[in-house]
Image 1 (cartoon, rainbow, N blue to C red):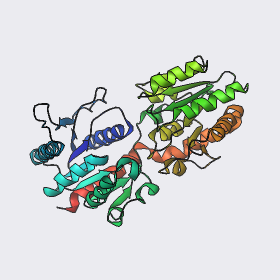
Image 2 (image 1 turned 180 degrees about the vertical axis):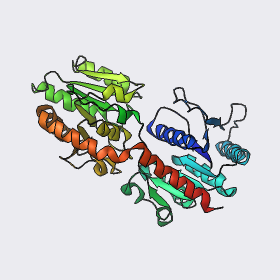
Image 3 (image 1 turned 30 degrees about the vertical axis):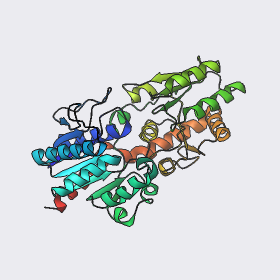
Image 4 (image 1 turned 60 degrees about the vertical axis):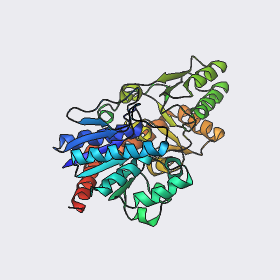
Length: 366
């Protein structure tokens, strides 16, 4: 089977990592895989060996002064990619990429599996885009969602094509589970922007320190983004530069966080959080906001395999974080339960489900 996979770029984000995991697995199973992107980012993941990468975006010489003309040129170039490469199925990821893949693939009789990665109003953020989403996604062979809450916002024509698939997790997280004594480190992983709301976590930890608690504990935030320097300055203004660290990007997340005592996801909004799943696989006691589109709520049973806290609620975030800090036995129990829960994310199982959907879609129009 020849599979074309499409995404905006291969920037170091969660969706891009998922697509590359699927691509690598399909390639290892004997499928021919190529990846199509609109552009290149400054910092990108490495394309797995044996997989071709095609960039179809417009060069500066090709661009016109008209956004509509530029769109038509990009669509034409993408259509030519499919004509030349002749995929049996197309897997597209995120927003407008799904529109372009479905429009071009449909015109050539190529089935498209479109993956929606965030809640509808975040991924399709204008009324016009939401109308187009219902129109185009309803023409896909399959539409992949990460949670049931996420698909409920879409029309019936989209729901009829819907399938819920888990995110494939890198095998390194299953190989680096720490069995020793956990360190007094609170960690968080994610893009440093407004939606991830790391300031909530910083304020909660700062309040615990101010109350004379958390002796020996530190907070490490892994990731980069537009708010990183602002948060560095804020931490310095609190006088906590020796307790709270903005770590930037890490090349090996599993190795960086595997010994941590607590993992926190303070986000305001999330599709289905890879970072939370990865921390649970590692057996780290996890605390997450109960955010839309419901991914953390599907992963965590409060008090059993993790803790949930309302979005933006500083007092509850502080109380739950303090509970973990003060209760080593509960941390151990919840971490062990998290590890058991996350076993369903084994790469063999999850990647097999993605391959099955792609194979079924490819056969549908033959």
